[in-house]
Length: 137
Image (tube, rainbow, N blue to C red; front, side, top):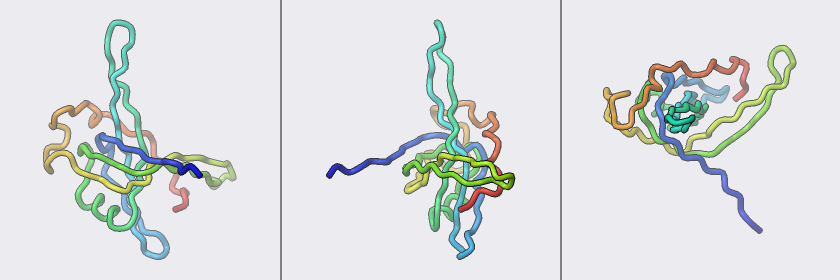
């Protein structure tokens, strides 16, 4: 029987400070948006295309994110993709795809956000609007 593989590895900059919440049983969960840049050739010139990823970290990793990460920090995130659905307050079915983080590593010293090698201009971009607050955990 073949095994499946669901693994994501990203290097990018935080679009906002992590937001930490706690489930009903007290389990910490942190959410943040991560911007990754890719060069795209359009005509004779190269442009940068930014993709936004929703990152979710649980338990101790969530606490570490809340304590050490901030907007603009360059990080490595490893995890798995999860797509889930729910009904919003108006009864509409909504979908989201997120990365459930297993490992997060800071790639530059604290205080140097946005100034490291390869630092694009994603720190000046606004992340996508947040998903409504009624997203279940």
